[in-house]
Length: 479
Image 1 (cartoon, rainbow, N blue to C red):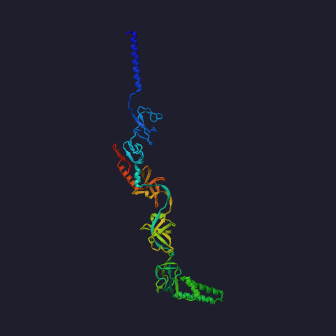
Image 2: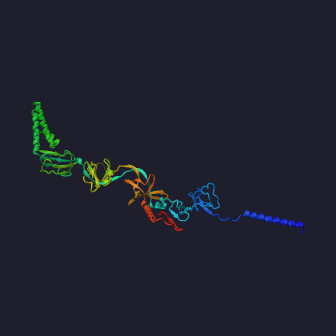
């Protein structure tokens, strides 16, 4: 082989070797090998890089946390928060809660029925107030029939209820009493309870003293007529004598009707008619036909029952709610379904030590005579109203030394809260401490929720709960 051919062979070999090396390098660049596994340091919030998590998580909007790798440089704006690539301080996860606010929890990551990831609850996120909150599912709330009401300012009125007896109005009582001695000869009203009218004859009375007084009057009147032509001084004296005789009859209680009859007829009557001083009914009758009546004897007791009193007994702690002039409703066993209207006229100044009650006088009109003394009465006195912060009476849970209400926090959460109460109305109670206007309290099925809260508190009193077993499942505050 000549020299030229050898040179051509060597050149071809050099070109082939160079091409092989170049192709190998190109293939190495165009077909990279599988990279080594990158180590994740932590996961950061997609919208707030300062919030991190050691495990995969989702934010409030359901977006995945972004992983931060060991070989990844800090992004712009994160230099101050993460000056180095080392992992932040690990946060301890207590459990994972339902993303929809339901009480269902889990010790490990999981998804709900809609495929949403459970949200981790860290040790530094749980506040002490959350430990007292009771969580109930919406289905359970509906099944229990839970109803709520708002805490609001309103006019609070309390009705005072009491019992009493109907009595005759003391100002309408009349007693027929003689001011001279006599004998009852004819008795016209002879039964207790009989109704009488003013001026109606009660009985006829014979009295020697009364006969003498009538004679004195007639003699003085006749003498005045006989001395019409006498000196004026004499006539004046006779006139004084006539008037004195008439006044004597009036002082003895002789009615004007009998006096006018005596003046008109000019005849002495043996029997004097004693008439009723007022309209009413005879409560007591001591007069008996033929008996001798002495001066000062009470023969009849007559009561005007067109208006009566109800004497009600009010407990000491309710006296501050009663005042003169308040409207009163009275119901009687004798007339079911009927209500009589009256008003408070007087509160007696003393209490009965045995019952710790005070008497309150109520005046009732009785135009038809339906109300009778000693009837049993049920009294309702309308209390004075004043505007206060109030809640329904059914929302209050009282037991022992505690007074609680259940405050609705939303999303099936209820907080047992102690309160201080004031005046109690018919349906509402004044709130002094513990609540503010606008909050919502439970008014129905609250005792069931309170029972769940009490059970939860009793279990927590034994100490902090142990971590749930791996793969296990627990419910916090679930009914």
